[in-house]
Length: 298
Image (cartoon, rainbow, N blue to C red):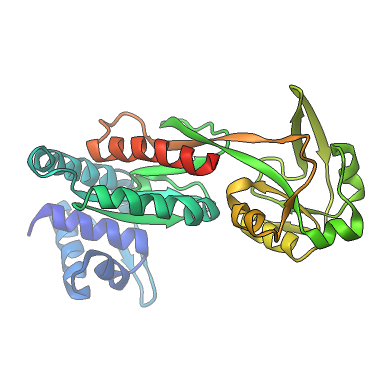
């Protein structure tokens, strides 16, 4: 058997927790996936997995191998794809991680546009507001919003996300609109807990920062959910503008406190330190930089 196939079967099984899910991911049979993993264990002379009727777990040796195997397989794929790309253009799979709301509203459409230019590429987009382990999960590129401090990772700024303070017309008609941040203490506020300091809302006016510490009945870990609650007239929401652009255009929400600029945070492309960046990843980062900046600025 080929050790590359064995490693791929092991990594897929370890990441999914079952031979069945790994087989679906690899496009092979359940029996063949199990056979590959057993062959790898035989080759190494050590048990890598603990098998039960419900789940497959890792032994200490399996955990050590999983910490390194995805990067090795990615490097091999990059090497082979790089040779092929010189004559056939960009090819292979790119695994991308992004936050849920931003991924749905911008990253997925952006990948669709990038894919049209590069028919030899395929994509695995994984949306999660949690910070993923790029090496362990085999992620080639993560797109993240906000200030990041991560060792062993390279970060490239590709744009900015602007926050907007919004409310429904019905809420404004009933409760009025705040004129300055000091008024927010008198209003119902919907707190997006994905923000770095959720109840600290920061604004700029004439170069000076104005901060409000808010309270609210609703705390949600989704900008889109906060916007939906605001559309229902349940309070003011302070969320990234990309999460409410459609509602603002339709009139379901209106911008309030327009004399104050909402917080601006960076949008970054993140990838592993110490690896030669494949040409297809460089191309995607450059494309994302142009595409996301144009879309977010709109």
